[in-house]
Length: 155
Image 1 (tube, rainbow, N blue to C red):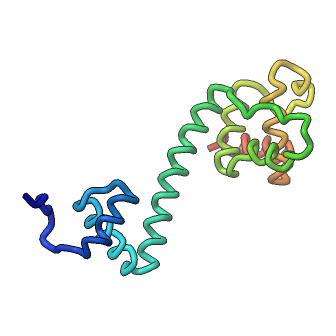
Image 2 (image 1 turned 120 degrees about the horizontal axis):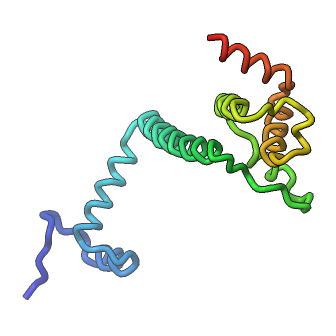
Image 3 (image 1 turned 60 degrees about the vertical axis):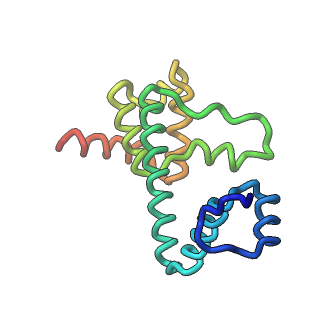
C-alpha cells in the first residue's frame, strides 16, 4: 500500500526523499516551506524590510520597558571589569538612549540630588557612575541636568 500523499502535487520522488532525509520534515512541511520561500522570494524587498523594522521596533519597546523597570528599582549595569580589552563594550552597556537616560535622571533626582558632587562618595556610587558615563557620552553637564529637572518641574 502506498503512503498517503497529503498535498495534491507530486514532486520528484528522489528530491523529496533527499529533502525529507536531510531535514526530517514531512511532505506537508516541505510543501509549506517551499510555498513560504516562494512568497519571500517574490515579495517586494521594501515590504520585507518594513516588516523587519516593525519586528525590531517591537523588540526595542519590549527591552526599553524592561530596562526602565529595572532602572527604577535602582538596578544598574554591573561595574566595568579591570580588563581593558573590553573597555568599549563595558562603556556601551552603560549607555542608554538619550530619552530614556533623561527619564531615569529625572526619576533619580526625585530620590536624591545626583548633581551634588558630595553625593558621589556616598551610598549610591553605582548609580552616580552610571549617570556620569551617560553624561559624558552625551556631552552633557550637571548644569544641563539641573536645567532639565527645573524645566520639567516648572511645567
